[in-house]
Image (cartoon, rainbow, N blue to C red; front, side, top):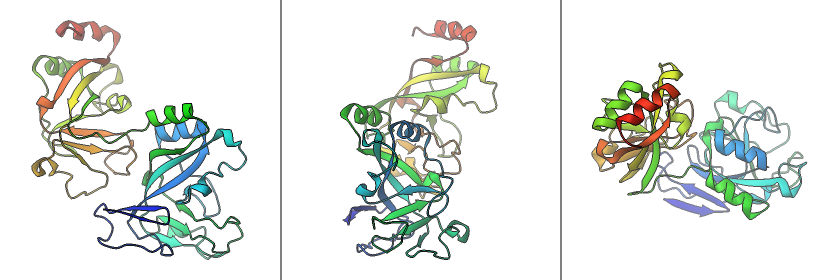
Length: 311
């Protein structure tokens, strides 16, 4: 369910209380998921989209990622930059536990995160001297709670097109995607010759683990010398896709039994099982995953693999 009010979009992901519609003056609901905005430079926007947000070292609310539900607020940042270098990112924020900070010298203005809160919220027109614009502001302590989902504003169409093309999007049902799988030389030969087999387990249960992010695939197998790793390029028919974006998701291991073909873990979603923050997919039926090429392999190994099949 999605609810619009005062520029917010509230998405009920099952973690927030069902059936509650907030009024404009109310505090963000604990554990809610909201659309917000973040103003930054072109160079920083590229880094954020590629690697995720990082905590600011300081600010009026201490350490964290500064965002706002008011796009006008985000459009003013970075403050000392030219408008031609400003980009506004549209972000999805899991606010967690929220603390309202609504006056100067608030006793928890800088230590709210140490008191068990995930987000500090400055309501609009609260009179704080450090917010002369009177516009709403939020500070999220854990950067993994903030994910880029779109580009709200750029100085020109070329920058907009470039940035949009680098944002990972949710796989669409019944789509066919290029993905990658990291393995060793022996397994690469077997996969090319006989096809994939279902893993016996994993963070998403049984299936074939793949990623659209080549950097993710290049890490596997985890305990293998990087010089012995092979990355296979794949064509994947995802079928029906289920988004798994939090620890202990009710369908983390049962999605295939609920009629889904692929489970998708979006980048930087904060799951402890994915400390890298890189995107991951699990495809239940190995027949949906086909090898179409070799994306990366040691030079002395590449020829051996290429002889196995014609690529």
